[in-house]
Length: 107
Ligand SMILES: N=c1c2ncn([C@@H]3O[C@H](COP(=O)(O)OP(=O)(O)OP(=O)(O)O)[C@@H](O)[C@H]3O)c2ncn1[C@@H]1O[C@H](COP(=O)(O)O)[C@@H](O)[C@H]1O
Image 1 (cartoon, rainbow, N blue to C red):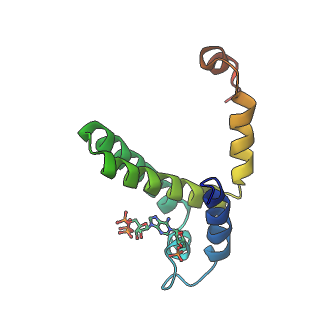
Image 2 (image 1 turned 135 degrees about the vertical axis):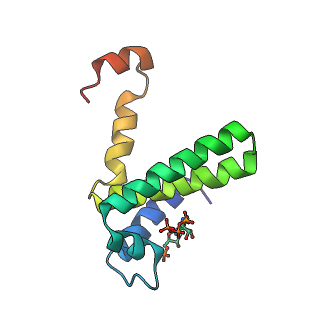
Image 3 (image 1 turned 45 degrees about the vertical axis):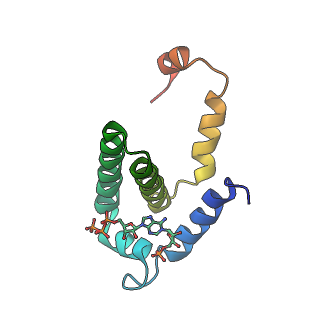
């Protein structure tokens, strides 16, 4: 199976569970706690990813990176930002120099 499909499936699952029962779904539980809690989780998972990278534990890094991507997708969903919009932004940057691109970025 193509790995790229998992992001689309995960986005659909997150959208489906968002308003669900917090006692039966982690995605619903996080959304019930509000945007600040979701954003906090993204920050925590980012920090844990950095720690795993610096500790040199490859398996730990893969797990933390998966946690980070998952929580970032929960955050994007909660803010009604489709993943396609982020991917389109990456496509827009594709082929441009990161050095030049940084200077011309609007945000
Ligand atoms: N990919 C994930 C995924 N990655 C990590 N996690 C959960 O993220 C949580 C992170 O653990 P933490 O200890 O950091 O957080 P916590 O202790 O639960 O919460 P706090 O203490 O921060 O309040 C764990 O409960 C993990 O199970 C995930 N939960 C769900 N998914 C996907 O989301 C789908 C829907 O899940 P439900 O909403 O639970 O149905 C699943 O089928 C999966 O595909």
